[in-house]
Image (cartoon, rainbow, N blue to C red; front, side, top):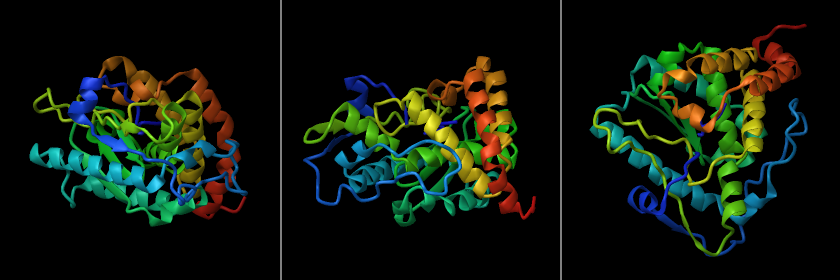
Length: 289
């Protein structure tokens, strides 16, 4: 499941200049190693250590960039009356689910304790969601309404996107692609500016101009699965979620699937890993067996 991260654009230079901004990384700072997240000793899924290349990109600066882009997205949504108010029932539901997931996050990234987490809902038929570096989460109503997500399935979507942020895939992708000491264009195709009335027509799920790799997606699937199970959400929902994705992908409006392709291999992998986290789920809901 992922982005929902989510986080995956290929913009040309013109689009980068128009919608993004240039973010200068002037070398590795002394604190660049802060927040490196390894695999927790008690992890039930096997994903290995997170990429150490992340240390080449200062986490704090990337998170600051994400905060600026996230704020721009919310402001545009507000202008178009697409930003859900604080008392919106779907937003309150998402925040309740996210609170339980975030409580499990520090196991995967100690730095996440310092993040100013935010969860917002944007009115759009687009099926999409993402979590930017630093814990900035946005969900579009299309994914809730068109897929008719249960709380357990919504937790799998959110868990996957949160996992991308916790494992700092954006930092690693920047380092792998560009390195440091150069000006990096963090083009953020956040807004469907050419589509009046459809804020998210062209919304991506990546902060940067890079797509997450297949390994990143596997990583986020499994880490998100475990986070959700630890938070008391049924891991079987990871399978039903992707079965729903597969059924609706031919209908269009699937920004999520442009960066998170569905298929039998993904579902099979999740089904194989569900038993590994079932004990965590039972423990979370108080079932002793």
